[in-house]
Image 1 (cartoon, helix red, strand yellow):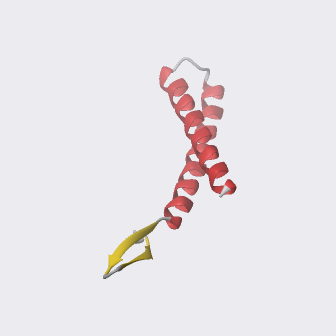
Image 2: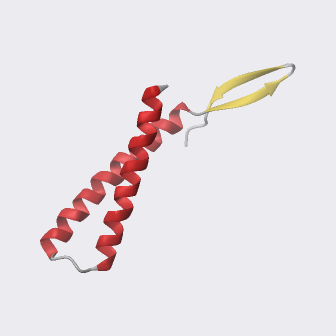
Amino acid sequence: MAEQKADGAAFEKNLEELERVVKQLEAGELPLEQSIQLYERGVALSEACRKQFDDAESRVEILLKRGSGVRAEPFPEK
């Protein structure tokens, strides 16, 4: 359970940093080389967030009520 909390914290941290990167790039006030480095960082953060999201999605289960009980099934794949 502690690992899941750490993953969630890492996702939130990466997402916050990605939002800061996007704002800096949208401002358009950075030199070209710094903009390129920031863009590359943004791509890496985006990929990390996507992987963390996909990992979390694969752990999600749907609870279905069947008769007098409840049964868990994997979340449907895309």
